[in-house]
Amino acid sequence: MAVKKQLKTSISIITQFYPPDYAATGQFVYDLAGALAQEGFDVSVFTGMPGYAFRQTDVKHEERNNGVFVRRTGSIHLMSKRIRNKVFSSVLFIIRCFIKLLRKDIRGSHLVLTSAPPFLGLIGWLYNKIFGHSYSCIIYDIYPEVAVRLKVVPPDHLIVKFWEFVNHKVWHRAESLIVLSEPMQQLLIQKHRDLADKIHVIHSWADPKFISPIAKSDNWFAKQYDLTDCFVVLYSGNLGRCHDNKTILECAQLLSYRSDIKFVFIGNGVGSQVIKQAIATGELTNTLQLPYQDREVLPFSLTACDLSLVSILPNVGDTIAPSKIYGILAAARPVAVICPENNYLRELVAEGDCGACFDNGHAQELADYICWLAANPHIQSTLGRNARRLLERRYTIDRAIPKYITALGLSEQSSLSVEQTQQSLHNI
View 1: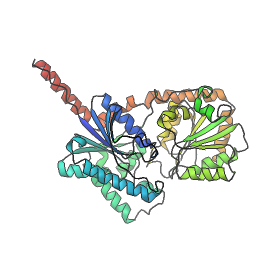
View 2: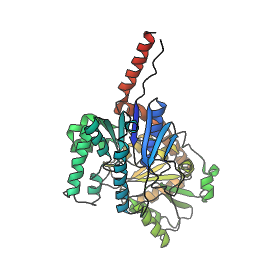
View 3: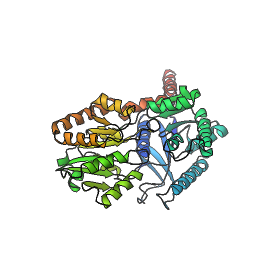
C-alpha cells in the first residue's frame, strides 16, 4: 500500500508591503513566510507592487521566492508621499484583495492579515462571514489609538468610533491576534477584555546570519561615505510621527562642534524632513542624510556606525513596537533609546546590558553619553558583544516561529498530518 503524502496547511499572508519594499512590516513578513515554508507549510503572499521602492520596475507580478509563492497586484504612485494618496492606494489594495481572493486556490486554508494597511482585516471578516474561512491578524500598530494619541483626530470623532467598531468585529471573529509587545497586549485587553484568550505576544527579530558584525575598516559602506575615522551615530529607518526627532535633533546640534562625531540618518518620514531642513540651513554640520537602502545593503549600513539610536514618543509606547532595535542587536552595536520611563525597551536594554536609555527631551544627557562612549572604545565593544548575545538568545526567527505556529493554530494541524502519516505506515 502506498504511503499517503503528508498533508500541507496552505497559508495565505496578505500584506500591502513586501520586499523589495523597504517597509519594516514587509521585511518581517518575508522572514515569517520563508520560515513557515521551511517548516513544511504551503505559503503564499498576496501583496502590492512596491510603494516605498517604487522606482524598482523589474518586479514580477507572480514569482516563487524564498520558498513562497508571491502574487502582486497593481499599484499607483501619483503623489506618493501625500496622505490622501496613501489612503487611496490602501483602499484600492483592499478592494483588489477582496476580488482576487474570491479564488479559493489563492485564499488557501488559513488567511493571515497584517495591520498594513488599516482595515485590511475586513477581508478576513468578510470571507469568514461568506465562506466560514479562518483567519488571524498580525497587529503591528494599534489604530486608531495611535492617531488619537498623536492628536491627529479627537477621541470622540466619528471615524474613531467607526474604526473601533470595525476592529472589534474583525478581531472578535479572528482565530488569533498577534502583537509585538506586552504593553500592546495589555492595551488591547483593556479595550477588549473578551479578546484576552486569543492575543499572543511574539516579539520581532533579526536574522543573525543575514546581519552579522563587520568592522568599519572592512565595511565598504563605511568607506564609501567616509565613516571609518570618526565616531558614527546612526538612525536607520522611518523617523515618523511616533518617533522623537526633537531630542535627536537637539543632541546633534549640541555636538555639531565635534568634527570627530558624525550623525547619519538613513530612511524617511516626517522627522527626516526636519533633519533635512536643519542640514540645509547649516544647523547641522556633522550630519549625513541618505535615502532608504536596498535590503542587501542593510548588513553594511547597520554596521557602519559605533552607536545606533531608537526613539519613541512618550504617549505611544503601548501602541507600536520599534522593530529597528533587533537589527541593531544583530549588528553588534550599542544602542541608545529615547523613550519614557515605563517603556518596555528599557527592560530589553537593561537585560542585555547593551546600551543606555534616556528620557524624552534629555538631549544633553544623550550628548554626554555619546562623548563618553566615543572616548571609551573598549566599552563600545563590550556593549556590542552583549547586544549580539541578547539577539541570539531571544530575538531570532528560530525563537519566534514555534510561537507563530502555535498562535496561528498550525501546530494542531501539523500533528494531525503526522498522525495520518503514521496511520498510513501502520496500514502498510
